[in-house]
Length: 460
Ligand code: SAH
Ligand code: SF4
Ligand code: F3S
Image (cartoon, rainbow, N blue to C red):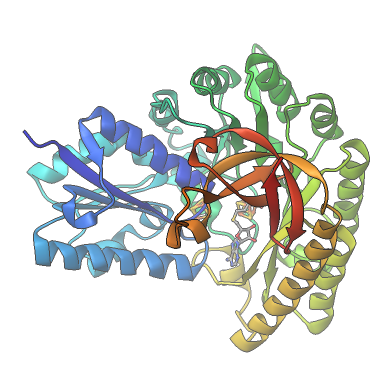
């Protein structure tokens, strides 16, 4: 008898990628096998993001496509929308995409097996959490959610993995939807995290990335004592042999020197921080409700570079926040020059319904100006990264081979060799020609050329 098939597509951040992986494991347990073709699937899932309007529009267009396939081919029989957009706008989705069978927020994903069952028997299923009630203490945080991570099915070929150490966010940056769609900040118990990492270590996983929206504020009380991120890093390091351990994303306030000291001492913690400044002007940082000044941010990065030599820094910037002047924008350019990031994710401000910025300010920077400022930051960042990468030419670096590069995927070479895409310990992308059996291994390569985002290398 033919088994059931599922199709899953993931938008958004690493949290969503992890959720999709955990769900895929859960579905495999239920007897489903994965397919790359939605019109061959019994169940199609779109895991969505709400961080910018563009992400929500993309989710709606993907749903529309699934609906089109179902009308044409009769499949996918069940359509599910999950993740942050599902949590933010269940009613909107129900009204404007009434064909959707399941709407499920990120804090209800453990209930998916039941929802799938119910959707087959009855009609629409909606499962979202009331984070307001949870924050106010009227409702308890759903402990059942922990089972999603605890029951993780580890694939025996898995070489890279995300491990959640923290859920939600309590920072309420004025522009950001995450605290509303992911709920209150919650740190997972260290022993559960270690158990999960041991499972991954046992199958030979080469890299784990600890995930939290503000990962440096991780804190969990255990036998009356608080375990901090620094403590957790020692614990992870001492309890596994995984050669690369990373953590993202760091929030620039409450960043202890103990974390940096742990990074310096523990050789398998990668010298890399993703620590977004968001803006270079103190006036805008205040409006954004970010709880640090540009001066404090610079001091923190200087300290990080002192304690962890060769640490690379990645950042995020938002351009076109309400009332951003040319002078404010200059401050962001100055900060990029001062920090010399490895790479930056730059975003045009997108007003998010329900956030503090939406209530208090008007989205008054015209799109042409947002685009112009976006390009200015990007060009400056590219120039700096290219200059810094040039210093690497001639060096030999260890890289973890992640897979076949985009170039080789679209244009395979006839000689059996492919272009492989790999990463250095400090998170730089390197490409080189090699055989596919290198995927998942850590190998030395020699850099012979660079661009702002890529190191071009040869095997040694
Ligand atoms: N927790 C992480 C980031 C989560 S969202 C942190 O605090 O650093 C990822 C990035 O999206 C943010 O760093 C920010 O730069 C961007 N972002 C968030 N909300 C946005 C909005 N409304 N418009 C544009 N960019 C936004
Ligand atoms: Fe959003 Fe700020 Fe929380 Fe990051 S720290 S997820 S930007 S509210
Ligand atoms: Fe991530 Fe987007 Fe949700 S950035 S937490 S998937 S809103």
